[in-house]
Image (cartoon, rainbow, N blue to C red; front, side, top):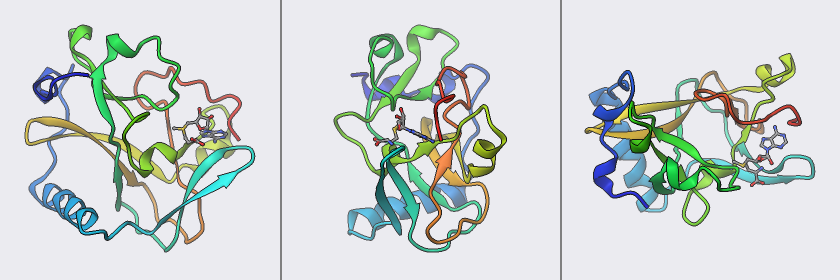
Length: 174
Ligand SMILES: C[S@@+](CC[C@H](N)C(=O)[O-])C[C@H]1O[C@@H](n2cnc3c(N)ncnc32)[C@H](O)[C@@H]1O
């Protein structure tokens, strides 16, 4: 695992956007709500083709923070040969040995059950209703999944697994 000090947003190649004060307050409020047991209105539903999926249990407005992508944080170099299908870039450093990733295999939250779009079909792209955005929050990188349009109750949540490195194979995704 990487020490907390490894998550130093200033190392990001090209920089990472700083989260606004207002959004940072919202993020802290989300954390507090979770701590007291107020969970977001999302359901984990099993699908025979897609495995576990996440769906909206109420209407969700565009730009709502859905969840932070959390888990153990490790150096990318330690995980390159892992067969996990849920590793997420946290910091993509100019010096690759300083790049870190989130590994949600042992500890995580609902984010690891959110499925991805098929990058090779127009239908896949139409399904996308979340965007994955990395922010500098108080000097540390954080990954958030945010609604990129209004989402109907009952709609499944999808984002593009290939936002940055384009290395995730999605040809077989439904
Ligand atoms: C981060 S996990 C998402 C949760 C996963 N469905 C599960 O059951 O644990 C990523 C894996 O889910 C599956 N997956 C994600 N999106 C999919 C899609 N659109 N169609 C089919 N399988 C998908 C693939 O097996 C992928 O490797």
